[in-house]
Image: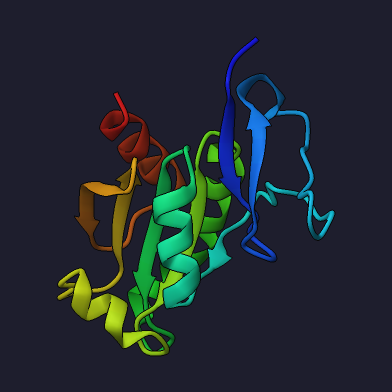
Amino acid sequence: MSDPLHIVCPHCHTTNRVRAEQLGSDPACGSCKKALFIAHSTALDEAAFDKHITRNQIPVLVDFWAPWCGPCRQMAPAYEQAAAQLEPQLRVAKVDTEAVPNLGARFNIRSIPTLALFKNGREVARQAGAMGAADIVRWVQANLR
């Protein structure tokens, strides 16, 4: 048996303890009782972002985007397809840089869409520009090796 992992709920942002072997068996949040993995991205504000990055013991993929950005809107369906393939091995999230400008500034986001991959609370990879679902999955897998 493995030690439990800390997994932050995408709904109520409560930290849960889940054994690694249970990640694929649809674990539910102990607080709100909703699914911990939803096979699509989670929109994050500043407080939720900090909690997901620092408390999740699985990697977190973040799409920094804005609603007025054509390439962002074009990539959105591919990002959701990638989320369905990547969860529950990592959390897939989105940050609207228009609604949460402090995060864009804090991470020096200069072009959107920008994907950032976080592991153990720190950024390990970054990629700017729209990508297809298969390219997103390949990029994540290559950067988690």
